[in-house]
Image (cartoon, rainbow, N blue to C red; front, side):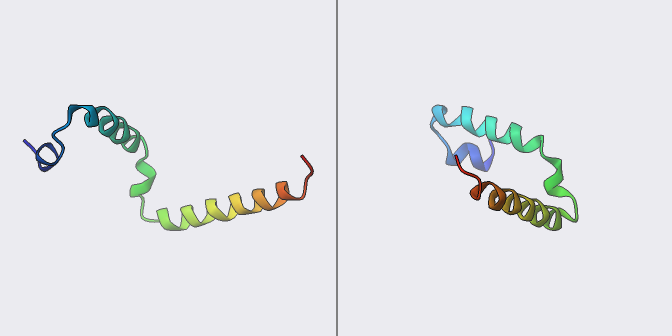
Length: 58
């Protein structure tokens, strides 16, 4: 029994927990040393993309 087993006693909660955990396991990039720099670069890119689309009419 883990600490999480003791904290979460509702079986309905386990499916989402396992789904989230499986998703996080597929994201090894969060463990690389320069993750913060990569995240900042991605945010800048998204902001630039967002700025360009705001000027275009729908």
